Amino acid sequence: MKSLIKKFIPRSAISWYHLFLAKLAAWWFGYPSRRLVVVGVTGTGGKSSTVYLLAKLLEAAGKKVGVTSTVFFKVGEWEKLNDKKMTMLGRFQTQKMLSRMVKAGCEIALIETTSQGIEQFRHIDIDYDVVVLTNLYPEHLEAHGGFANYQKAKGKLFAALATTYKKSFAPPKTIIVNGDDEQAEYFLSFPADKKVVFGLKPNSFVVDEQIKAFNYLSAGQNISFKIEDQDFSLSLMGELNIYNSLCAVTITKVLGLGWQKIKLAAGAMKNIPGRQEFIEAGQNFKVMVDYAFEPKAMTALYETIKQIPHQRIIHVLGGTGGGRDVARRPILGEIAGQQASVVIVTNEDPYDDDPLMIINQVADGAIRKGKQEGQDLWKILDRREAIAKAIALSQPEDLILVTGKGSEQAICVKNGQKIPWDDRQVAKEEILKALK
Image 1 (cartoon, rainbow, N blue to C red):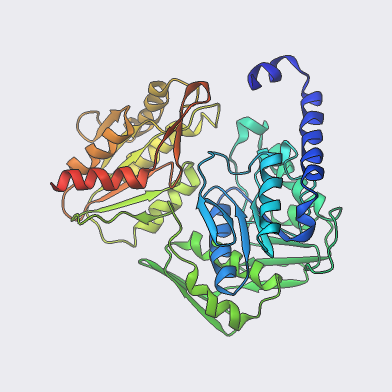
Image 2 (image 1 turned 90 degrees about the horizontal axis):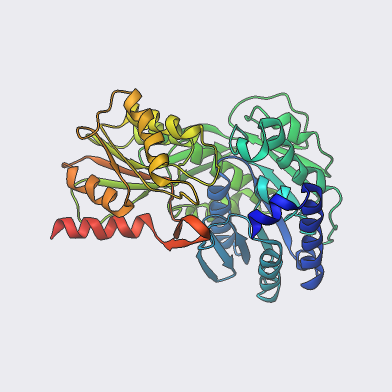
């Protein structure tokens, strides 16, 4: 039905339709965001992890929090993994969630805000108080028609901040930006009551506050850094999680918590579901599930796992359908083909695309890096069989990577259907089978 509407109704009319729905939803639920401090986190990478870490940090500091994100939904004590296969919910669902947060006595709402959600006006009449950019690099370009349009879509969230409803109990309207990102200046150009930059590197931005991390280190399954006179040590891995943690800490500071309270609560910032998550079931090899589904994130993942003792790497991966950045499929195959000893290409989220075509396109990249089918490259349509194959091929101290879905709860196939799924649960089940 949606495809037919897009085919026969002018784009401008569809935009007005989305805008109308956004305003109707906010009115229907009584503008609940006006009774919450609302933080919107956007960016290409790291936004889900930042929101998760921030929620756990705020909760440990005694705040009652609500969340909508790729990873999970939360209303106070209630939470569950996101099973909708949508990062940013539809307008009525989002406003309903905000209403639930108000009724549950939440103080703060954290909303992972996507470029495609912004383009469909899902952010309209959500009265944000703080908007945050984790980073920006080329992604979703086919959906937006180029990087400039992608950046502009993200920029609409920041442009809208100055026009949102002001609350006496909330912090001043604040823009927070990763100052180490190449696009930082663009996002700092929008009007706001306060502008804050976080990062690891020197910069020349003239803003209200700079929060810099020093003496930062990623070693094994731990990261550490220092802000002013406070030392932070967290059970997370990789430089990306230094940025994610620093971003979460910065937001918490903007929300009014002091450094000592932030440091005491920071120990709760760990174990992000489906992000560099190890699966343990008594095996003598390592299995890690990660969400990385685009080249930059996968490259960063391989940098991180260099810190983990292992023998061979066996990588199970796929590619996404539905018109999502087709060009990245062979690039993902090239990265895996270059870095892993064994590559197994499988189904991921084909939507209405031919899953075998996607698998072949990813495998072509691995072949270009010297992998040979039947020797160190396998193409297996069934994702469970692919994970089982990786386990069967494993030797002591090998590392199996299963990427692309993280903690997602479904595989999206044709005609809008969803197959219940969890890479982490399937990996555990197949390990236990192999150990019998």
